[in-house]
Length: 255
Ligand code: NAP
Image 1 (tube, rainbow, N blue to C red):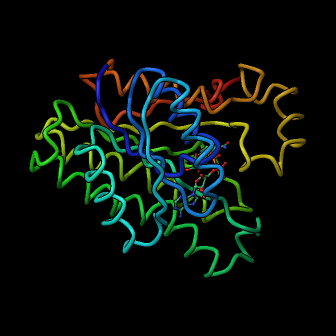
Image 2 (tube, rainbow, N blue to C red):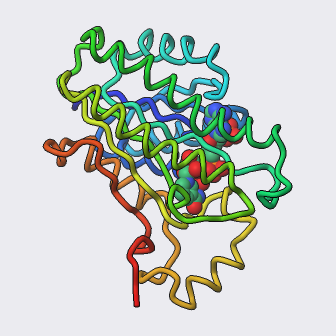
């Protein structure tokens, strides 16, 4: 049994839970970070343990940089290492508003959660990885982006901008950290069935039925979990700054 440790932000529900589960089935230990839904986080922990992994639940708001130190400290106190950071926590705007109407408050909240928080959490963890404090053989970092990094949705501009930022963040950290043997990846999900997309389920049901994605089904959190697992298990050792689309083929231009 390995004792590799993944710190997965926003692992209480949705895609983060799918990632935690996929890793746990391969005996990873998981730090299940959540912001507010402790019951969901505990449920993820039960699933992780049922799948054969170990885990702890740690409350921290990734948008609040003051929480980062505690998140990392609790991880190290419990497991003593971080083999992989998965920046998954993210939010859609609370209200979808046209780009001509959206507010500074919505912009700031979404950017702090989806981009500023992951940027500085990555900086903190990458320094530890660089300084070999963590003593792990092949550390890696995975950022959960979105098709919204290149597909325009004018009623959630701040979300699209935050995800475009995640793409460049992946490139920057991949470039900077390669010399330390730390590979950095972006996984770019398409339309995945989670709480985040439940409000627009009917709209996407129809679009998918009509052929929006070549693979005509919703994606599931486990689809993303499989891609993270491939990275976790070192199946992409000569790739960094790489984008892996998990989107049923949405990204292809078609005639
Ligand atoms: P979700 O179902 O809404 O779950 C979001 C998770 O993130 C929850 O566990 C939530 O914690 C946590 N979270 C939110 N803000 C946080 C914060 N400030 N600090 C710590 N944790 C926080 O969303 P999802 O669909 O799984 O999305 C996960 C990631 O995938 C996001 O980055 C999202 O942008 C991206 N993505 C999703 C889709 C999709 O179709 N669903 C597509 C492309 C990309 P609590 O439970 O405590 O609230």
